[in-house]
Amino acid sequence: MSFIQAALLGLLAGIGIWDSRVFGIMMIDRPLVLGPLVGLILGDFTTGIVIGASLELVMMGVAGIGSATPPDTVSGTILATAFAIISGLDISAAVALALPIATLGQLVGILDRTLNAAFVRQADKAADRGDYSGVDRALWCGAGLFFVSYFVLVFAGSLLGSAVIGAFVDRIPQSVIKGLSIASGMLPALGIAILMQLLFDKKNAAFFFIGWALTALMGVNTVGAAVIGTAIAYTVYHYTMATKEHAPAASCAEPSEMSDDLGGEL
Image (cartoon, rainbow, N blue to C red; front, side, top):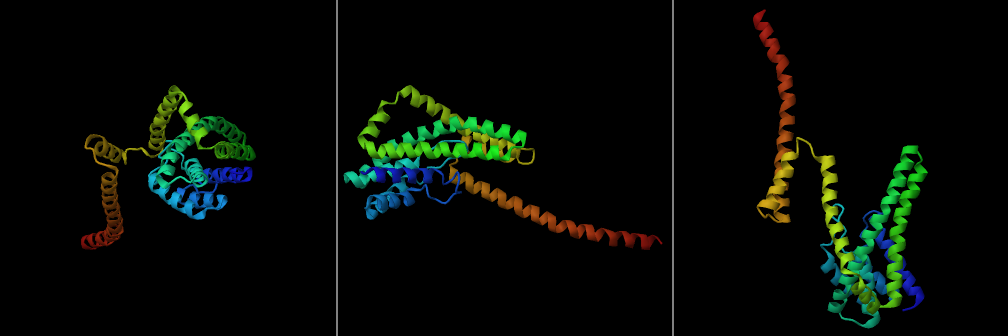
């Protein structure tokens, strides 16, 4: 693989990691999109489409819920597709190769989020001073950290090859991986706590406990909980609309009833 191709793959990784952070959700970070783009860069568009579609089926359920850090689909897809095209790997081998690379990208993402805490503090201080340009600089520094880290990961991985990347992942101490996994496992609870701080009140407290009871005590899966929640929301919506429709009629009927009563008394 040439230096220019590796640099282009690195730029593609930076753009892909910016998809949900700068560009909005345009699905650039999905394997179904990244695979063909890698194929274009390396001159094998057909293989890029096939591997991208295969990795999309594997990583379709990978999503960041709350503050959780999932395996990185961007670096996993780009490097696995690139290695498969360069080395002539089959689809099953490419899929198997994508998983450890995505795990390495996950560790990089956790590190980036940890370092971004410093930029968040800078943004808070700038906001307290009314320095809006300072807030912009802090936020762009955080986004730039993601771009640079994933550019370096994919660029270096493209030049070094799959064997070096696999050996590097195997050499990471288990204590480090375990510590990062524990820290990552605590982040979803933090994300849920932040959401509950914004949404939790006396009116909807019952719905939180109903969802907890369904999933934790009764073992209802995500699809079942979603169906039950949709049914409850539908019922509450129609009950609320019916109450609003009857309220004006009742208020309009009150003056006539009062006039009839007054007329009868007069």
